[in-house]
Amino acid sequence: MSNLHNHFIDWLRNAHAMEEQAETLLEGMKTRVKEYPQLQSRIIQHIQETKQQQAQLKTCIERLDSSTSTLKDLAGKAIATGQVMSGVFMEDEIVKGTIGAYVFENMEIASYITLIAAAELLGDSQTKHVLEGILLQEQEMSDWLLANMPTITKAYLSQK
Ligand code: MG
Ligand code: FE
Image (cartoon, rainbow, N blue to C red):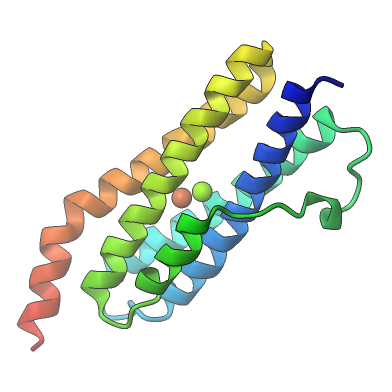
């Protein structure tokens, strides 16, 4: 296997770790946004998408690396930005939490854009197709958060 191929698999493992982190962060946020039903239901939807993304990435990794057979072999390293962002994401204050979620989504977007470029270079159209589907879900979540930020902010402030 070429270095490029191995590097690509590493990146896919890291993306899988990032999605596990995303699930943890979204689950934490879900319980803190009870008073914002629209935000909560969008978060619940994205938790489902995130779990699906994990499974899709796992399938891609298994296809590319026949030695990967257990979840433990998936262990990757979520990039440091994600660790830093998780602090903001976990903020009790809903507005800061929403900003954190938006930044996290955009980190995911950047990650999938780099993965798609790598898949193109490798001529791996099957993985590229999967990554493009995931990218679309991240972009939709990012767009939703941005579009709803004024409403969330006003709802938060009017409770003060
Ligand atoms: Mg994701
Ligand atoms: Fe996401």
